[in-house]
Image 1 (tube, rainbow, N blue to C red):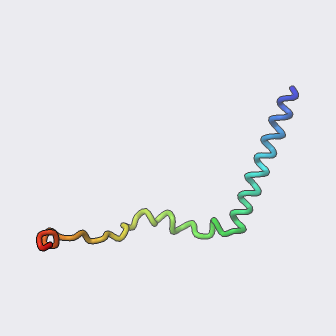
Image 2 (cartoon, helix red, strand yellow):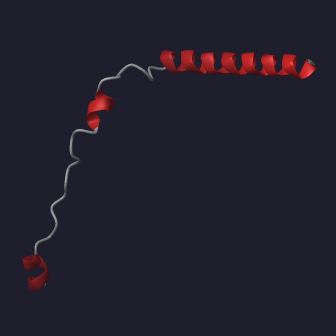
Image 3 (tube, helix red, strand yellow):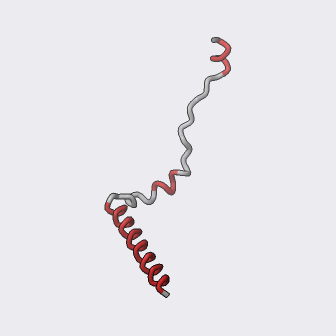
Length: 59
């Protein structure tokens, strides 16, 4: 039965740690922009142009 009290205490301690981490992230602005990350995947990255075959032949 004493292990049950220990596990309840550990779970409450972990919940408090996660709650503090959440408030810390709110304070530091981690959740300010929730719209951009969701649409960022829809845009292509800038593609660099590869050298054409002419450039390789002329060298």
